[in-house]
Every structure is written in C-alpha cells, then in structure tokens.
Image 1 (tube, rainbow, N blue to C red):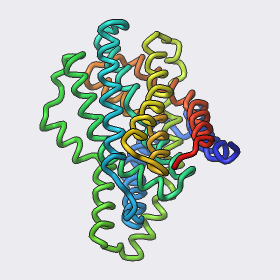
Image 2 (cartoon, helix red, strand yellow; image 1 turned 180 degrees about the vertical axis):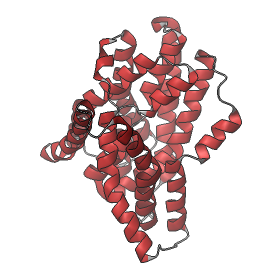
Image 3 (cartoon, rainbow, N blue to C red; image 1 turned 90 degrees about the vertical axis):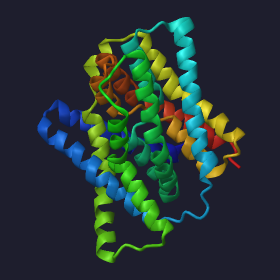
Length: 310
C-alpha cells in the first residue's frame, strides 16, 4: 500500500500544481498552449522512441494483451448503446460525451503511472497498447458521432491522415521498428532522447492540471455520474476479467487494469467541439474523472496487490 501511494501522490501533486499555476496565471495561458503542443509533438514522442528502441521485447505476447483491451472497448460500446435505448435516453450530443468519457484514456497519466509503478517493462507494454488503442478508439468515437451527432465534418481520408499524423503512434512505430530491426541509435542521439524523455512526464502532468475546469462541475447531470462510474469502476473490472479469460497474466494483466482505470483524455474535449458533442458535459467529465481517479486507482491497485497475479 505504501509503495502504491508513493507512486500515485507525486503524479497527482503535479496535476494539482498545474491547476494552481493556471489559477494564478503563471505562466500565462499562451505559454501552456505552446507547452502542451511541445509535450505532445516533441517530448512524448522522444520518450516513446527512446524507451521502445532500447527495451527488451522478447517476452511480450501481444495478441491477447491488445485484444483484451479492444474487446473491452467493444463491450462497453454495446452496453452503452443498449442501456441508452432502454434506460438513459440521453440526447445525441450528451451521449457522445458520455461515450468518450467511458472509453478514452489520458495518455500522460497512463505513461507516468505505468513508469512509476512498473518501470521500463510496464512502459513498453503501455506503448504497445497505445499503438493499437489510439487509432481504434478514434474509430469507435467517430462512428458514435456519425450515429448520434450526425456530423459530416470528418471524412474517411481526413481521419486516416489524422491517425498517421499522430506523433505518439508514429513514435511507437519508429521505436518498435528500430528495436525489431536491431538498429542502435548513435550515442549522441540516444542521450538527447533520454534528456528529452526526462522532461516529458512532469510537463505532461502539469498540462493535465492546466486543462481542468472545476467551474464546469456545477453542471452536474446524471450523464456525468454515468460516465464516471463506467470509466473508473466498470471498465477496469471488465478488462480484468476479459484479460484473465484470454489467458493474460503477470505484468501485462497489471498494465491492462491500470489502463482501464485511467481517467478520460483531455483530447475528448477537442473532438466534442469539432464534431458536435456537449462541451460543458465533456469538460465536467474530464475534470471529475481526473479528480476522482486518484482514489479509484489507489483502491484498484490495492485490491490487485492482494490478488495473487500468476
């Protein structure tokens, strides 16, 4: 328990610091906009390339590991669509925001916690998961928008381009390819990536805090509680049993459950804005899940600690 708290508390203190810095407007808002872009396009890709290119991938059995996560997303999707038809009756924009809040994950928090708790081995598994889940989740989300929000603002071609232009996916492919082809980075490049990697997680977590909007929590709705319950409670339980039934054990199982317990991504707000989601609800979901996730993740990790993972 002590080790879990020692890993979790610094992560959420950095998020809190980011929110505090935003409140006192230091640095100004423009700084954080550029810092977030710099983190997304430079620092995190550097981290992923560095870790993947130098990691040992020999013992990774990836098919069932990745399929467990994809299957869980699919199950959540079907459950939400069915329950909405017979119980919830959310309006279209609200449903898209609830849906995004139920299946997306915060990349910065996921990588930071995986690194803090499970080290490089966990980080490599997290990168493998991200390579397949980021495009897959985008496909699911855009499909839901097309059904529930009748959005015609995105075409198949523009969607495919957005996937291949995603710097995190590109970085995972580059790092994994270098490793698979046994190509070593020259020493100056490797050391440069290592230095950049050291800055990725703290700056990314500060950006998460800057992105919180506490005032939007006044817009409390049943939709908000539904999304919080599904993402922080149902998703990690469901992914655990799905993975176990598919034969996933050990560290991959732990990483999957941690992935399932993540709060939703800040980028969900951007997609909601572009494709016609409920913006206030989306912002409230992101903020509420991020704030509550320290407690839910702590509880889940403590339960796993008592569970004998084979």
